[in-house]
Length: 205
Image 1: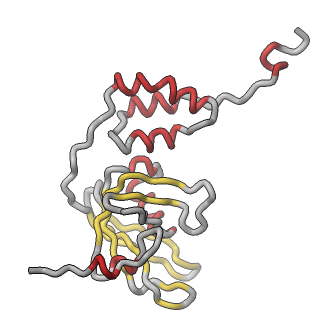
Image 2: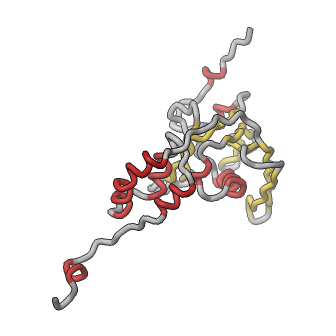
């Protein structure tokens, strides 16, 4: 019988760390993606995943380039997809090898892919990403009647600046997938700038 002690060596942190992956490569099934409004420093993208327990994955710039290159720059589309990550002990920080999280496989790619990028002025790195085959759960789709019943509220929130299309899409897709026509309908709503009394009634009237 296997006696798994991996849970006893996890680091205490508010995010997934390379040390959490020592001897324990992980498959992350993406449940949500956020872009920190504060900028987030070197880690502005926050990826939530099944079983994350409050420790999201915050990819470094190199891994963000891999995700953008192979999954696209619209991070809302990453929800429901999966990635395999591992601890690369050769990653350096301030000249010291401290380890870092790297992606080795992604779902939703049809074959082995390579992503090349400049690591420094004199060094170019190529990442080889394998297709990840995982059993995909059939996600529900938002019924049009339920979506339309909430649309007026969402429309007002977007027009008044209380919310954005991206945040609404992310929130809704935690429950079920939106159809492209539903997303297009949300994208057709625009923020209405506040008008002055003169603009509303017309000058000189």
